[in-house]
Image (cartoon, rainbow over all chains, first blue to last red; front, side, top):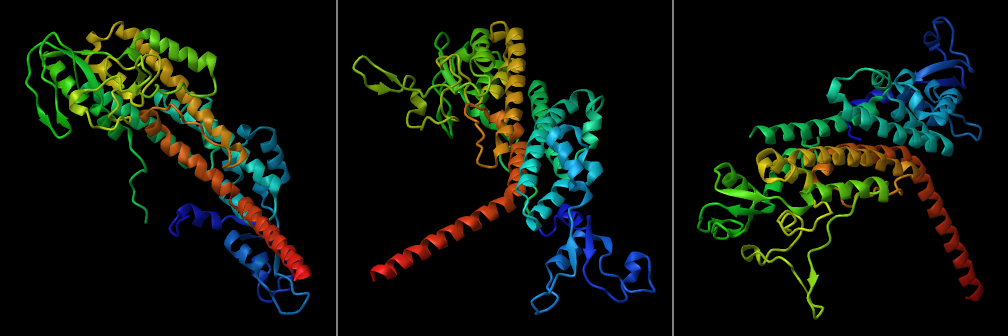
Length: 183
Length: 254
């Protein structure tokens, strides 16, 4: 992943639910309550880059030092979505869950030890990739339309770039074939 | 930042490279040898066949100075056989590439069946292999099958027996193999350990789906990266523990 990779920057801006473990003075405005301190136990959605830093930070040197926040799995990777993906990877519009679904997924896999989640994400990606290739190949014939439109709208950023690559290949082959005929 | 060029050859470049393949022509006029960078072309004398690079053969064909002999694998029967193999015999893999060019004589000594005099000392790997001449094996698709077939159908359709049938068979074959190519990425479900089988895939097909397949492999790698890191750590720990035990054993004997 490059430093300039816009997708990885945008992935870092995805919100994840966090629970604060400490009272934090002067931060009440985060919870729409500017006059009070932020209470321990408040649930807030923080951007991934901040949440990750806070969750891994160490607040003190004592034995019972805790990180200021605990992370939870984001809505996009909740039980319900994972269950639906397990049943049929094709039927879930991933983009409605998160535009950077897989990016979020890999970040979460780095933070949590989730063997099953990893296997399900991989199966989802591979199964949907075959469909993406099919749509990318057929896209040029009659325009993107019909039943494929719903599926294509549900692709997340990784899958969109995959679609673009597959379509590029088909298109340049077609162009070459036309060129041969004209010469 | 990365170079914005795509990795590997793009279809245009593959199409250009395939014009180096040699094909068999039946000349209609005499033509002396031409000194080319790749060697001398054979002298053309009308009734005798000769092997020329595809681009030169096309040039002569356009000037009506030669007819191109289509390679045997471009015959409808051969293509039907390949389609049968792809669909019925082995619906999961691609049909195998043509056998390497060696033939044994009566005493069992293998030798090259075709030795075009001009290309005598050239290694017979795909771009230089005479896989599109009239004595190429039938029933197997060479590396540049799609491009050569397209070019011949576009410019020498009158030299190909039942060209329209060949054209429709080629369309079928291309679709069948593209579907297999898409399906082959499903092997990666088990992690990167699952291997993509691409034996017998042609150059143009590779150029067409290279970016897609690399994208899928890269995605699977990134999804499995953390699991892989954990596995490696565990392995390291296991090895460290084994070494500790070994040390203790040494101490006991020491």
